[in-house]
Length: 266
Image (cartoon, rainbow, N blue to C red; front, side):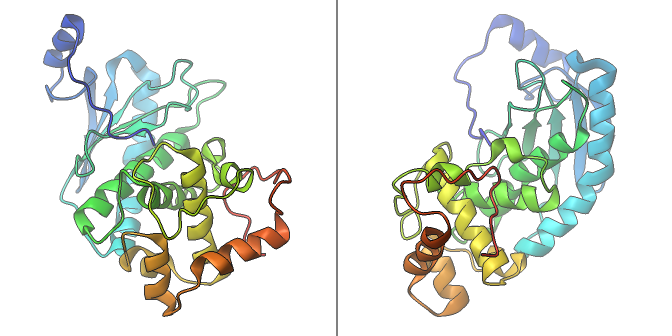
């Protein structure tokens, strides 16, 4: 979700703002809202009391979500910083989230204040970025900067927060394209909606159609989705089975009219 957000240089004003925070390396001047066993949660001071409200909601859910992700990946991460920040121009939750490298545990997550406050948007974005750190720490093949890892981060956020991130859905992008093969190949970018759409569909197919649990899927990590499938099934026909089923229900060349990422089971 817009990760790997690297800044080569900063303005003088920004540098001064960074010096005012308790954590000088943060990208925003931030207020410490609270901590748990694995998290320190901050709110960008520019968000005022509303930011504090959202950060409190994050504080109330982050450990519960961490335990689920740790169980799914079979990995533990010592510590995260969550920075609730205004990443969208209209503060409508559309700005996504980022961290600077796959292993970076400083997670910058947008807020939805307009048209109304929806704290679970930030909670879901936290999960999406957190997943990418778990992927990197596990180091078995999920690529936080590639389509397989980006797909998994989106899917697990959607699983823990159903319907909250529908505005980020990408499945239709792949269904409405010529459906390139991002199953036996991994796209080395996380910002291509078509390859991300292929990835989320394939992962939901493994879970909701074929019945594999998220812990099994996460822990049989591999450099491609096809190899993940092979490890789960001992079969070598992922693309034909996956694409063939979708062709029956969403024929190539016709608008899919799919507004969410998971159409399964079919």
